[in-house]
Structures are given as structure tokens and as C-alpha cells.
Amino acid sequence: MAGGEERIIVPTVFRDNYLAALRALTRTGRPDPLISVLDFAQRWTLAVNWISIPETQRELEACNAFLDSDEAEAEGLRLRMPGQNLREGFTWADDLPRPPSYHPP
Image (cartoon, rainbow, N blue to C red; front, side, top):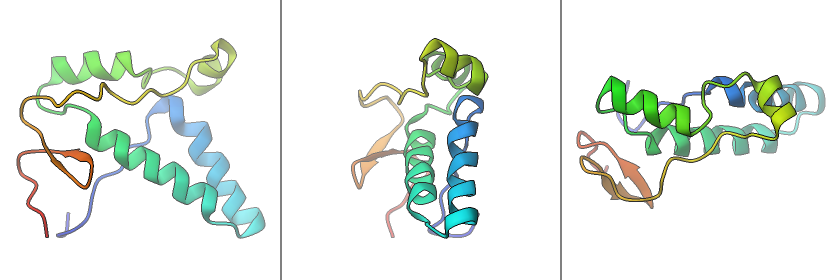
């Protein structure tokens, strides 16, 4: 990735939200829903502990990330933000957890 860019991951459970926001942009020209969805997805991506596969998998399961979006909707479940506690290996910048490799611009 180029400097100053961030990854955005859209988990399975959040897919319908993302697609609905894309449809809103395409059909009405309104970018606000897409901006909101991508903002949340980026904050969520940054909040997940990506340090090890077993820890990450547990955290993604706890956030409902692997649920099918239709099944989650039927059960009233949504993508949850990972715990707000400061985890080892992360620093804070702009009120978001950042990996150790992050260096502010």
C-alpha cells in the first residue's frame, strides 16, 4: 500500500450494508451511505487484532464477522466493533488503534 492509505475489510456479515450503500450511490448519486459504511469498515479493520491467526479468528467470531448477512439479519445480529480496551501491540492515533508499524504523517 502507498503511504497514507489504510486497508478496509468488509466482513461477510457486513456485505449487505456495503452493497446497499453502493446501490444508493449508483441509483441516487448520494455518496453519504457509502462513506458511512466505508468509515465504519475502516475503523473496524483497524480495531481488529491481526497479530496472530488464532487470536484474530477468535476476535472475528466474537464480532460476528463470519456470519452470513441474511442469517445474521434474521437473528438480529450485526457486525460488532472489537473490544475498546487498548490491546498489547497497538498504539492510538486519531482515536483509533494502530498497529506497531504505523507512523503518523
